[in-house]
Length: 222
Image 1 (cartoon, rainbow, N blue to C red):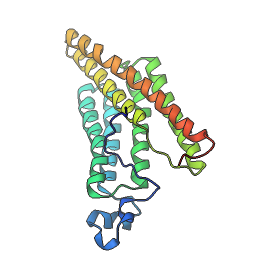
Image 2 (spheres, rainbow, N blue to C red; image 1 turned 90 degrees about the horizontal axis):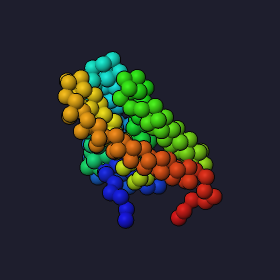
Image 3 (tube, rainbow, N blue to C red; image 1 turned 90 degrees about the vertical axis):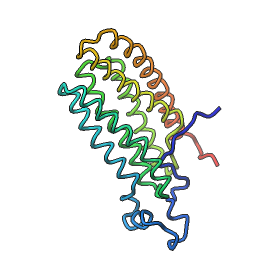
């Protein structure tokens, strides 16, 4: 049984949506995408908003503004969920958007590690595991692209990332409850968030192994 996969900037064969149809049929966003080589699209704008707001939110959390930072993270992750759907709806999925979606997710994951570990919101083991997942993804992806192979985010990797972020945001919510002197609520939130994060990490490691298999297999499957 295949895991459900949300709408993504996913393309096949390296061909953008607007390149699959005659130029006279392009909508206004496809025209803009073609003019900017796929850089300026509605989905990419959402991706950029999610990256900027996510980095700002993590900085707030690291500086002790846990509530504001957590709300900002929720907004940022909503942008990540919407970017692929918007790209699909406007017919502007392309290679730039697909890469940007993955890279920004990994940048935020890398930056979350020191910010949340500094506040002791996540454990050392969780921090090391998340950093390792990102490192393996970049290594496998780099080798895959260097060998001229097509590479996409796997279902396991995407579901794992979603659970990771769910767990991370849950643990920041736990810290908020502690700061607001709500120990029972903090205990309940932590009892859910910690396992969710750990399952996400496990799936993330499995997804990273998939990147490595793609990178080093002898021939591309047809």
